[in-house]
Length: 123
Image (cartoon, rainbow, N blue to C red; front, top):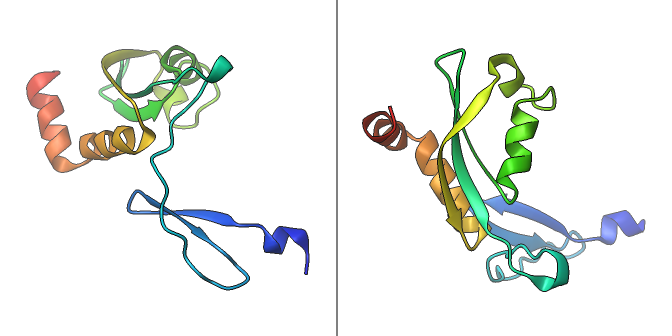
């Protein structure tokens, strides 16, 4: 068997990470939330953010570890959606200690209830 076929794969389903073994098809129990670690093992924080275009009536919701770098990427030619509506400004940002919570908040903002909250509180 090829080594690539033996390697484990990670599949994300409903924010629960499960490791599948392609050989046996068994499912391992999900581990603790992923924590980002920078240089020297310093814990990094995940940012959930909302951007607003200054030239169009568009918003963008995402999450990242490095918010400043991500804003530069949005305002450059590196991202497909956001390059059409640049420049972008940050109108909301919140920090979380784990990626799972940041993704949940991002998904909330992309839901109808989250869009209503944004309209009521940010615009």
